[in-house]
Length: 381
Ligand SMILES: [Zn+2]
Ligand SMILES: [Zn+2]
Image (tube, rainbow, N blue to C red; front, side, top):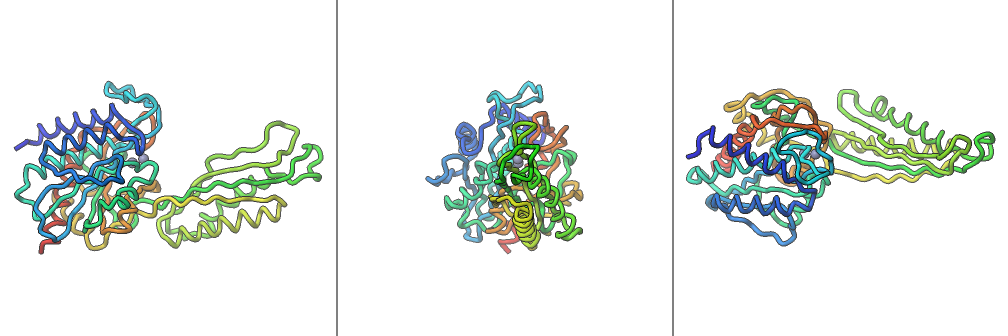
């Protein structure tokens, strides 16, 4: 039986291995090989799904047909040039585990060690899902489409949270992470000499008016007691000082925490862009790209997991995150619980200097382990 200090050392080694060898979404080939080799050695059965090119689905435990409990970790990294200066920094230049998915993988492998050692305690099957392509928001859907969760009765997962201390866990009932929408808008005006604006239709004036007015969606249309964020992050137009250009464009994102808020934001967005375009005599084309929905924790299972979490760890209040998570594709299909677990980072997700601490790994491992056993027990009753 592995003791805590041995386990901690193994977890730290595992995370450092993943951190050094990051791979981009849907290209996690070496990571996949490493994970399945490790799990095989622990006695897990690797389930094969031809549609899944990367990622690993593995199982352990008896089949008593009371429903499989699944545990999920994502495995992909980001196209970011690492600037941490760590001795185990990325060897794959321009690719970095800047979202802590290395932390997630090490934790789920740690849980695999505990499941394998305590196999006799399992009442039914435990399935581990090492999911590809979270950052591009298509991996969870790939896992679902491949048929890997067809018989899954509950699924749990977590995201490390750099602003929580090691050992801290936060679980919200309802919306834990935001629904994500992306937009881009192309504005076609009529170019002219800057000194004779009356002969054209200025797409810069149209763009700036639209961008300003879009902020009234958050301040005037959405419920002030519920969080909505709208950010325009990129604008382009024009090329010199004395010409009014033909066209401009901008892009950005909307984050909401309910289907209602999401619908309001989209409708008002369209109204504002179309209304102002008409008023300012330009044509606008909107591309609206729907991302993941809200990550919603299950009403029945969440209290059980919260109770179990309180027994072993420090449960803290944390704000919902306005970041998105493609775990929401699972929460829409299967009763789910998603947590935040402290990784005590120096910076935030997706930053090139993010360094997380290994101290929180043991909490994540045991959170997976105890939560899964608790849910199994509940289904077994
Ligand atoms: Zn991320
Ligand atoms: Zn992430």
